[in-house]
Image (cartoon, rainbow, N blue to C red; front, side, top):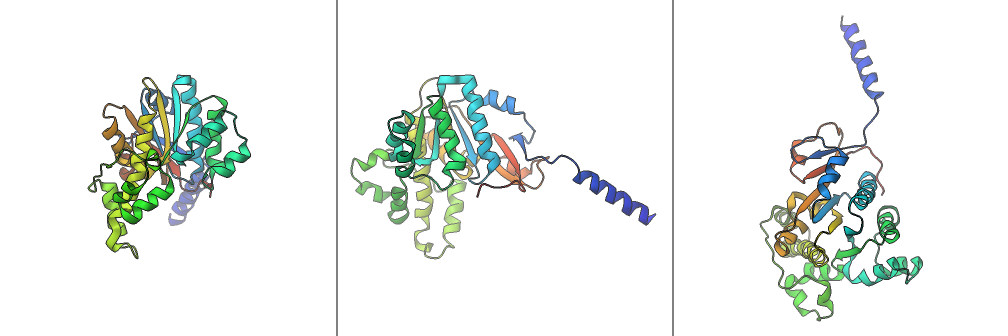
Length: 290
């Protein structure tokens, strides 16, 4: 009998291994599976949609492009794109490239592009170029985030009026008790060399969030849908950028997507259901882009 059950379990295991593997599944915040079509129909009614990615997730990058295509089919000239991966003072370079004023070589040499730009973000920018979709560089120039990390928000006051064009209005509202910033504060307190300056690390994160929110709101128009791409930490739990958009534009209709990894995508873990309005659960075995 023992041998029989051993063989039975082996056969069941072989059968499960032979099943078609799933690379991802979509869920809503109630932990229920949701179809791509239903999610897209909901998202097209919003003012701003945040797609929180894992920067090296091939599935997330593929679905960002697919979502862009789907929303463009639904709202056409009412769609705008924006991204953390482009810094605000590079907006002129992006606009020049999108309008065929400069060559791709000049654009890629002069814009401060992420190392994974060509594989992960170039398809989005090229789709925007092909269809004349506005593309907003929303992030703070990295030198100013570094300034906040060194001197806090007071360092921004020392900048010229020209430099402050790439910042949100000063002074920047800041709530250190938001769980995301509080977590960073706790982590920083245990980092070498950061114990006495831990709050500035959270403020450096906050100035990125505030700047992205500022340029999103600045470029919002009635009836337009803004699709923003960012690391999930910037929009999870409706904190970060989302919190600042609500500060700057309280009436904005907002939905969020977050990307999480699980070894089984067929059922979402409880801890992942609350991070966003829609959760992209990716199989942790899927190849990453870097």
